[in-house]
View 1 (cartoon, rainbow, N blue to C red):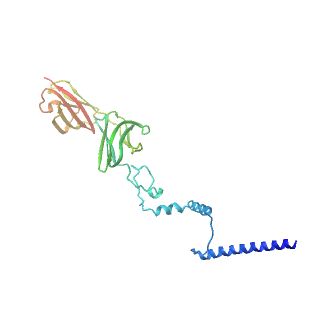
View 2: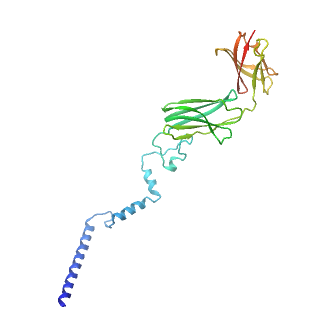
Length: 285
């Protein structure tokens, strides 16, 4: 029995000596490994990974990360940019130019039933083209035509579109710019006001003799209205042009005021009160 207990004491002593040696070895290792604070704290790989992930949840992590990048924050125009917020607010600084830089979009009435639209770009990247959309209430837009883009262009480009079905009412227009990859961007909406005073023009009698025929205007509100007038022959050649032509109080303009006209077909265009009117007449014997 004494021999049994003696063997146990010897075994326990050996274990304690081994643990003490291991402790001294770790202590020596910690002292021999220099750190910033000269204190060594052991962290397992799992603990280190958890702490690394935790740092990404702090508010300043991404701010410091992006402020160290080489991008310079810039504000982008909401007229042509797909991202409406500023670069400073979202840290989404563009590294490439926007697909299309639209610098102008406008329209006006011509021959009061038609509306002419025009717009200008100063840069295009993979631009498929523009869908032209019209609305009569400013809410529901319909596609009324397509104008092909330049594709890739680093110079100023001008586009036009004529809407022949705008009518006399107020109309709203916008552009839907399409990229070659299928993405699109809407332009701002422009408004073309309704025709407040619709003026019409006819020739009577037609056909007729020059000394007997006249242009009759209806819808003219101002007495002694002045107008601009251009007269073309059947080949489209300008044969007469005049500004500040005075209209009679009865709304008539005799053709005898024009130079002598040979027999045939003529086209007259009149600019009156901001409206462009066109009519045709035939001079007969």
